[in-house]
Image 1 (tube, rainbow, N blue to C red):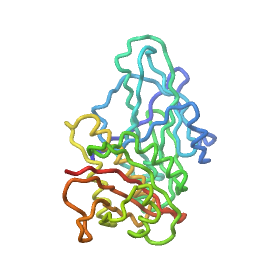
Image 2 (tube, rainbow, N blue to C red; image 1 turned 90 degrees about the horizontal axis):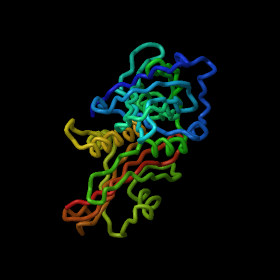
Image 3 (cartoon, rainbow, N blue to C red; image 1 turned 180 degrees about the horizontal axis):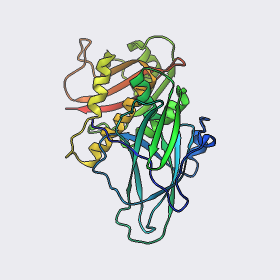
Length: 306
């Protein structure tokens, strides 16, 4: 999947939004920060084709894993949408630096009011990519979006934070099968290995597994390869395919940056000899890993094969 950079954006008459030490809040208060704001994930991907309608930013600041900005634009008669993109590149300084880009689509709104939309930009996918790239659980990155610059403190995510981040990262992701399955979160307290029996005992009811279903398990790099495949798309693909791939790209960064023992399970009808049947049927595709606090978490999608 190709990646684009995000740069923080300029201000209105208030002036340049440069953060001070007082702005560098890292209290984990994501829920409070999101109140009354539109939550936007950071998309890892090529956003060069996205709309670039004008806007101005004000009041850029951090709260937990969120970058809070107020976006002002001309309009008032149509729905306006926003997308934040990142090219996956860290500049090797101290701390490392990177940039975001905000894409605004006014949907042809010609009205002349000046509404303001408060955004809460979720940075956990970017933080997870940092962890995976530098093989660490903590760090910091200087992030810019036009004239806004903030120092993002990267910390390990709790299970609750990871679930909240997954919900945001998965926006738009949908496994392209006849059932049009969106990723569904899985979580269970488990300190041992991720095995077939563990998956059946902890998640069997959620997955609605039949007693005679079969399971194939792969681990490590094979799981990363699978996730990479789900996150790829071509420049001429339809919007829903692109959006889904970008969603799986965010999920991939989130899981790889926060989990160990990545495991992929394909579960479906048995061929009667202990393997998966090759004829038509519905299969659960499950990705799991272990958090630092001993939980097994991940997600599943449904694949209808013919």
